[in-house]
Amino acid sequence: MPAHLRPLRLGVNIDHVATIRNARGGDHPDPVRAAEIVAAAGADGITAHLREDRRHIRDDDISRIQAATNLPLNLEMAATAEMVEIALRHRPHAACIVPEKREERTTEGGLDAAGLFDQLYPVVTRLADAGIRVSLFIEASERQVEAAMKLGAPVVEFHTGEYAHAERENRARELKRITDMAALAAKNGIEPHAGHGLTYANVQAIAVIPQLAELNIGHYLIGEAIFTGLEHAVRHMRELMDTARPSAGAGLGA
Image 1 (cartoon, rainbow, N blue to C red):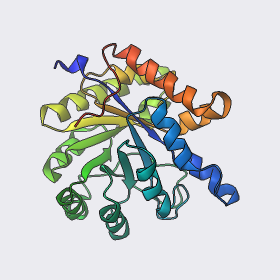
Image 2: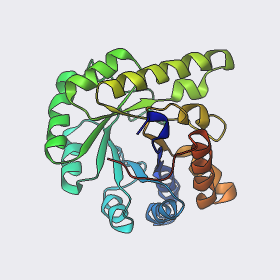
Image 3: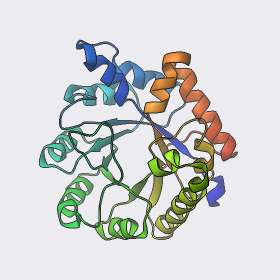
């Protein structure tokens, strides 16, 4: 199938439903209910980041999310022994390795896959050997794509924060960088994804990049859900993506 005709998947990150729950303690709002709504609204996957400090989802949320829907779970995680053991126990569809610092509000930039090669190699290998599809959350740079190739990662997710927050005069440059690196990844057998800072206003320029197979969007959708409801927010994002790539439809893909 030509690249421009491939369906573009939408993964919805439900972390910040759990953030609101954790602010008061207790069980409400339940991220599992969010996962069910997201599934009904036409998303193709659920993304959740199990942080070292458990500020978002908690350990018991993982199995509950997996049981609640048939959507694949993309577990974002740091490359630590603790997180590897958790991933091996729950066997999510995918594990996206991200950089993590306790003091950051959100993930700041991409993983330095090149600089951390020796640390990442055994993590990628163990996860892959367990049948978990490994993704690396990286900046859109040739150095990082080449490192992903050497690590044997089947997927990379490009950090789109620089694009999303760029001034108008710099946005085209950032978009070209992502476009070029998506093409490089695909040429070398790596499936490119993208995410971070994507909104109704900026998603279509990213969605039209033909090699991209999936976008992961969370904070913006949860924020919009406060005003319009989660189902509406997801459906509208799906519509914008499908308009940008007209032949796209919801589909899980490989």
